[in-house]
Length: 169
Ligand SMILES: [Fe+2]
Ligand SMILES: [Fe+2]
Image (cartoon, rainbow, N blue to C red; front, side, top):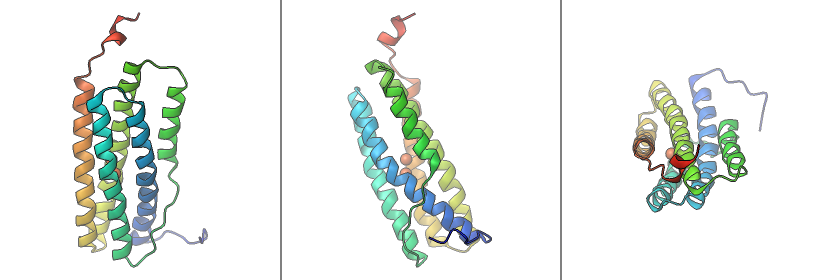
């Protein structure tokens, strides 16, 4: 990879963002598996599993976009998603109760969705700006799924049954 290459056009900026999004989505497949495996609530577990399947499609769509751009699909490490994964690992080391993990996982999932929404919410207008209407449409499908997932998780957070967590001082 040529690190000397500068980013000085909207297309460069778009491709750079796409490479980070590619890395993010790949890491989120593993992260969603971790959220599913560590959760106790069945509905929460299946929700993470479903979004994990959608996330695999998000990866496919990014690969389609690289294809549409006639570029090789290439991932560039995004430190933000790595930080989110690390935060979950550190939380798990604190011997949390099952309910504490479920509540933490809802918030962790929401943070990832907010981040993805910000990512696609910026890639789409950049694609429009450089006249890549088909690319914008492809990414729009992903954005809608991220927004739906955020809404689902937000409801789960609001309606969370604190159970045993409530009894502790
Ligand atoms: Fe995604
Ligand atoms: Fe997502």
